[in-house]
Image (tube, rainbow, N blue to C red; front, top):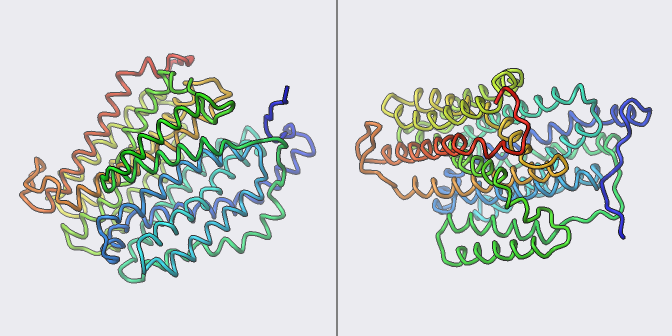
Length: 475
């Protein structure tokens, strides 16, 4: 019988070999975090201004593809990279990521102004390359940083994510003063990190490890087909969605070692928490673009001014990224309840604050939404891992990333279509008459109701979600 591959051996904490790897990891981590920062910066910047780019290239109806398709890729590769980190060389993974990151930058800068598909391809490569750093960071910390220090590193990781998002929004706001294609060139700086990373990243791999290429390909094809269907509603993508889903279902039932087994989908706790994640994150890729659209088309102010107002809400979330002790005190249930409540009300507030002016709708209301997001990620992910045995938690984390990417990508395609087509422009309960402002208000109200629906799902299925866990007093 073939011996099962468990992963690259990790030296015991306190041994000379471990101390050596610990020192190397601590030297590599700052550079890895910078690469990760640039990846998030690019994601947030283009996620805010894709409407501007679509208009400039003469294809406003396809503009959401700039965010939705790279979002799908981000979700799929997060699952892949998370799995690979246990088996392959972190050094080779990182170098491959840098190559993809820089290749996307060059393509976007050179060909982006010519065709929207060049922008999409460039962003796909950047997403695929930049995400390596995030996965490598988590693997380095989990393997080569002491248990006592890991929490601090994870908090830094969340805070860096938020600050990167804020910086991306600020840079996106400069789109009217500089050509947006210059944003693509920012990641070129990562090439200078290669010598130091070459000295400090582990170059170990596990023999006999195999990647479920077929499984990842099928789930990626399904996710892409669904997103494309919601983008242009053609029958081809509808059929492709059904075929790839059936193929994936057949594959995981027949394959010997699929990356995810059918048992996952027979687990009511797992399904319930994934439903909360899917519904709760449905508006996540849309809020920045929606706020930008309101500023441009309702208040007729520049993207630079819009970003200066929006950035404060993201910085608030960044600061609250260090709210670990607060979350621990509140417990999972209360944290998730508070999170979804504020996220839903924050989106609805954007609509009702539109008549009050740009500061209220573009600066104050988003703060309510982002305040909620700070209390959502950690406890909902923790809840997801409790639905399966510890040995399977890695796959759950990967599926969580994939679900977040799929729902955000579908959401931005759906809501962008609504905004560009003048959905419900006849008036709004937010006290807005007929016109473009009514469309934006109604879209945000719908988004808020959807997020609040996630709260209802969570409360109704609360006992189901935690049925496999040892519930502590905080729940």
